[in-house]
Structures are given as C-alpha cells and as structure tokens.
Amino acid sequence: MVEFALVAPIFFLLLFSIIQFGILFGGQNGLVASARELARYAAPYRVKTFTDASNVCADSRLRTQIDTFMKQSIPGYGPTNVRSRTITYSWGANANGTYYVELTVKVVYDHPLYVPLVGGLIDGFDPYPGDGKFTLDATESMRIENDDLTSTFSDKVCTI
Image (cartoon, rainbow, N blue to C red; front, side, top):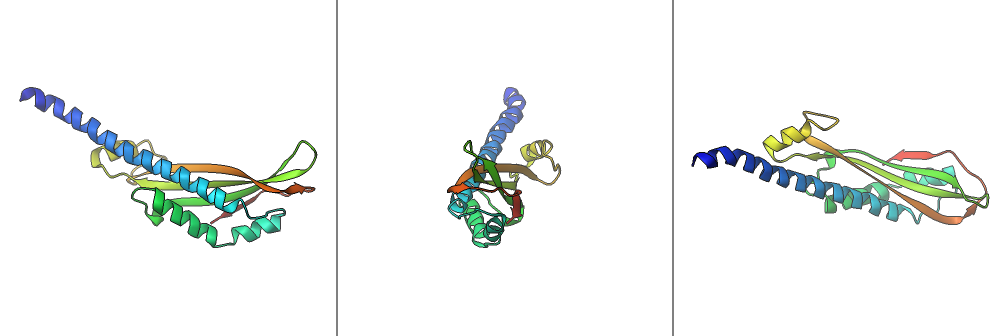
C-alpha cells in the first residue's frame, strides 16, 4: 500500500496530462481543419482588385462558415473563445511578369483547459496565463485561380 501511495500521484498526473493534451491536440486539429475549409470556401471568389477583396470581406457568409466549421471540428467549442479571425488577400508576382492573388486565413482560439491541476500547469506556458485557457492558432493559405493579372494592389486584411 505504501508503494501505491507514492506512485499513485505521479501516475494520475501522467494519466490526466495525457487526457488534457489529447483534448488540446484534438482542438488544434479541428482549428487547422476549420481554417483550411474556410480557405477552400473563400478561394473560388474572384478577387482581382482591392475592391473585390473588400467586397468578399464584407460577405457575412464567411463568418457563418468559419463558425460552423469550428463548431463541428473543435471539441468543447465556445464562440466566445475565438480571439481573432482574419483573412488576408495579397498580390504576388508570377515569373512572366503578371500577378496572382493569395488568400491567407488565420484563426486564434482560446481552448478551455478541463483538467484542473494539469490545466493550471499548462496555462502557465500560455501567452495569457491565469485565464484557464490555452491559445491555439492556425494559418492556411491558398492561391486564388484567376486569369493572370496585370496590376498589383496593397494587401487587404479583414477581420471576420
């Protein structure tokens, strides 16, 4: 019995750590999948100019889609835990002197920590310690297939 009393706290700490990290890794996988799906959803929009990018950013369907994707993919998803959702349209040069548009989706989510003792330890490594959440982020980029563009614009960053 004495041996069990000595080993049990370490055993349970390891066991609950594995459980908490499994939940966090599941949340990270869901966040990455959500960002990728939003990039796929937004890529067919034809963006050739800065105005086109502004119009797509103003479309409320993007926010609805990312919320739906995150709700389906992240265990324990809470909409109030989303720290930021941004879409960036940037113009790049092709080798032939024309331009293309690239879409980048970045999502930052504060995943709740469910296991009390282990969560407190993990929360200390977070950029925002003491809030009982661990900050996860995901970034996904896709090239928008347009005809070759003859002009470039400054990057358009929008929060959805």
